[in-house]
Image 1 (cartoon, rainbow, N blue to C red):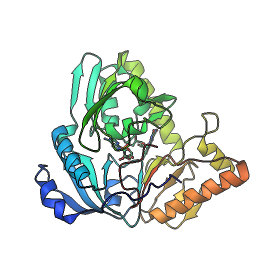
Image 2: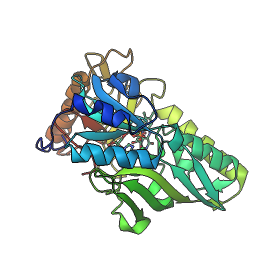
Image 3: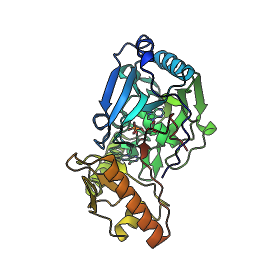
Image 4: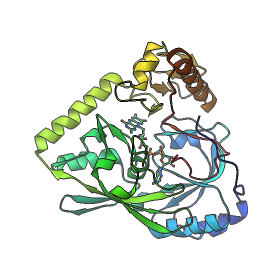
Length: 322
Ligand SMILES: Cc1cc2nc3c(=O)[nH]c(=O)nc-3n(C[C@H](O)[C@H](O)[C@H](O)COP(=O)(O)OP(=O)(O)OC[C@H]3O[C@@H](n4cnc5c(N)ncnc54)[C@H](O)[C@@H]3O)c2cc1C
């Protein structure tokens, strides 16, 4: 399991609601079900959801909440998060429609954090730009993809990143050149609490047909091996190595199709946990995760590390990058 840092923050303060609302154009939302904001379709109520439409709004909101010692996290497209059944008594920041912009300068693209990785990858392919063929089928926001260093088919988004722009948890504007971050597999190394507002990507002009064919092949490979029609968060565990993918290890341990409550290890891919009837709970998923880990440890001597971010109330800041 991911280590849970000690509770260092005040709990969600109702009295700050008017001050936070005064900083943003979009109405705040309260007690939003985690299941409605995540692809797992699981999770209890998120106490306060703040949608920011500009970088300036984000700066002001973070500065205020930081000053007041409030617990804050950023949620992208919710495709790699498991929200606890009890929900979170915290401020959840969402990047809004104003931060879906894309600015183009030749083969250099500044893509804002709320933009869809898949849509941008499709647009790049249609326009004959190569470099994001791997992203076909990854339901990420750009911010979440950068934070997670999303990847597939042997490629990762970090290889295309020139610059990451973001805001620190105290509201300070920051930027990192590609080489200033310690990228590795499913890890960007962004400082704890940093929120990505945009990324500058360098793509390469290529042959449209070749690029489109590669995207189609990648999508077809996904459809053949992944339960894309069911609620999930994609791969649950990181691959211990490219030669020993977690799915292969768990399949050999007989985990395919194992059910706990409303959640199941997919019978198509043993590294995917699915919520087929949308009746699963975080407790069910966590029990499956624990069972997989125990079996891998006891029967294979392998320590499986969750890739999915598990959001429980006690992790009191956006501290997933560890
Ligand atoms: C069907 C399916 C297929 C998938 N296939 C792949 C795959 O092939 N490869 C792969 O790598 N992943 C895959 N995933 C997992 C997931 O899509 C990626 O991890 C993705 O990068 C998460 O992006 P998100 O916007 O949904 O982030 P979220 O799930 O919302 O958040 C994930 C983490 O990123 C942080 N975060 C989100 N936005 C920001 C931001 N703007 N700034 C800073 N931190 C932020 C969150 O706080 C959280 O810690 C798949 C998931 C599904 C459901």
